[in-house]
Amino acid sequence: MADRTSALGGLTIGAVARQAKVRTSTLRFYESVGLLAAPRRVSGRRVYDADVLDVLRLVHLAKGAGFTVAEIRRLMHGFDRATPASARWQAMAARKLRDVTMLIERARGMQKVLEALLTCECVELADCARPPRPATARRRNGSNR
Image (cartoon, rainbow, N blue to C red; front, side, top):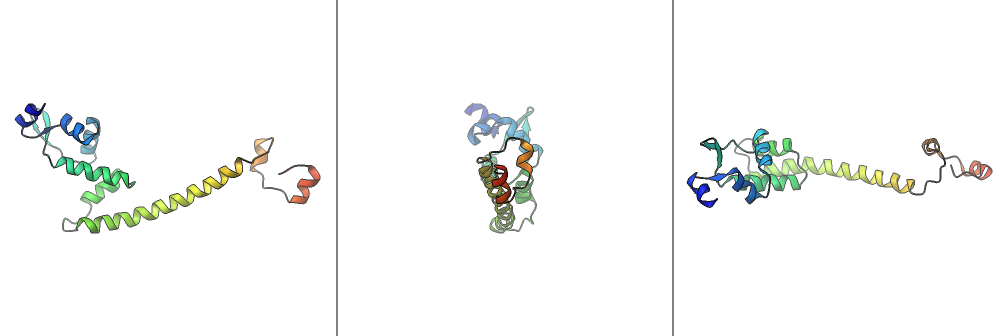
């Protein structure tokens, strides 16, 4: 494959996929959504320059930080060309960090509900949705809810 790759003057889609550890369909998808520039074609085959691997590492880093495809596209193409990478990351990270903080708070609330459900002693599901009764009413009925 190395001969074919060098004979084409770049990397085939298969070579890029192997080196980046992604599927060829992922590369086609990234092209379709604007994360990768469309490569030149030689005899109908995609031929990538080696710098595509740097772009894929950037996409991998951003995905690891939880950025969506749209956010990654904005990171890469939504700023003035003169905007340094650090300013782009800081703007995007500040927004994403707020989102993640809210997500963590929501997950903690979900955790509390699930922990409470682990101690549920209701007989009917409808009982679970009712607010708990005061302790004196529970003692009279022998019910915990």
